[in-house]
Length: 166
Image (cartoon, rainbow, N blue to C red):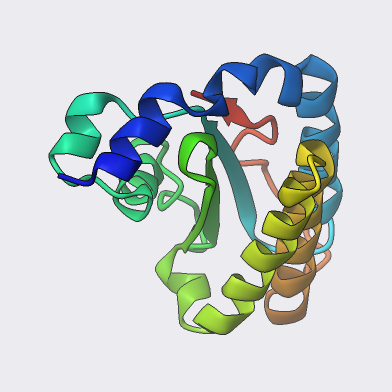
């Protein structure tokens, strides 16, 4: 059992979730998602989780595992062009995970996703949570626009733009 992870999830700063990600912040992030999706064929979903339950941490569930679970549960994989991307933030452990559907994963390398998480972590370290997520969303949008540019056709918005807060 990883005591450091247990302590972080039980006693970390997760209780500040409402202050860091209030309604105005979630609206601003949704606007950034929407603006980015106008430039590419991808579908971006943001999930922000305050902490993992004790039972999950005790059984070894990592932030990456949780992101993969949410990727499936939120049906990010279920887009017409296999173009879904989940940007997951676990506040208690200061973890950021990006999971891309197979259509995107074939074209975008892990170092490209890792660069996005570094930009986000830098903003979070300065206490700029809103900007950190918006930077991540904008960076992901630019990456998707480069690999999967919009084709001029009108598309249905397949995934909600507003972040899911857990």
